[in-house]
Image (cartoon, rainbow, N blue to C red):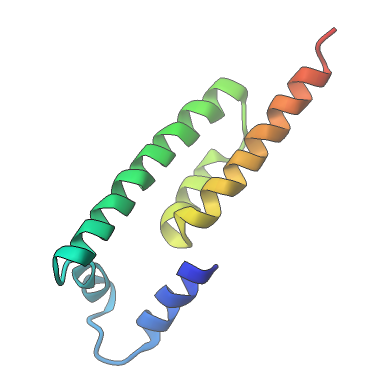
Length: 97
């Protein structure tokens, strides 16, 4: 929730440019551009993995994890998905003869 708190604080501050300003702030210099691009690449890879694994294992509500990745933070939704995935794997293993 650390990342989401910073997002909320930014959005509540005056004169920030709103959502457009939020994304523009990710590219104000080379350092922030590098971090922003790195985060976007990781987020895309995580979303692809979540969708593929959810289909393979039958993890329900994958759309909620994907939406939370962009609405809250990938650092929150991806670990939650991995927990749901692990529970699904454990349930499948325990039902094997």
